[in-house]
Length: 158
Image 1 (tube, rainbow, N blue to C red):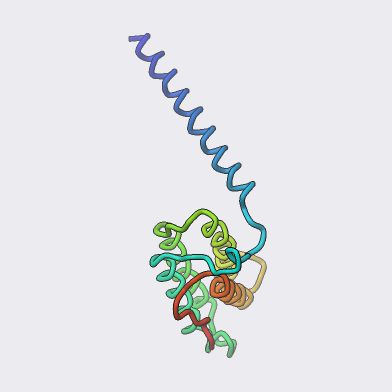
Image 2 (image 1 turned 180 degrees about the vertical axis):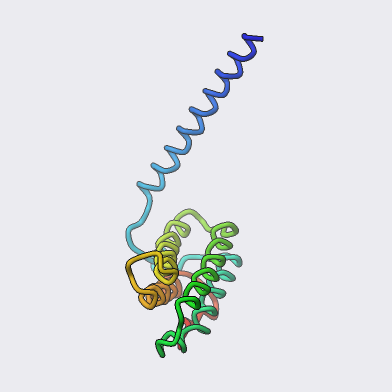
């Protein structure tokens, strides 16, 4: 029985070491390949997939509905909180279902980071104002349209 326990501990140790090494390698690869600024793919927009287009359209539509009140300074903290939650759900769907080529995915991470930063500000989680968070989300949506293929894309206006 003691031999079996020792064997199990040894196997578990090897497995955990392999997982830790793989995670380190995965993080290291992302760190060395991560772009610092958006750029086109040899002069062309990056390809997208249906789930990403669905999510980004949902975010854009949510912003289009909110913009008239935001521009008139009539958007309450509770409405910003609700909008942030809606955008977060769309981001989660995109992350869970998006299957982009690795270089396109790396570019998308820059847009997603800007979206998430805006969402956090709208939710009141950062020192920046909620309105500033909405502006950041719009800038991210504009960048998405400039760098990613999305037939019929039109930036939200209010």
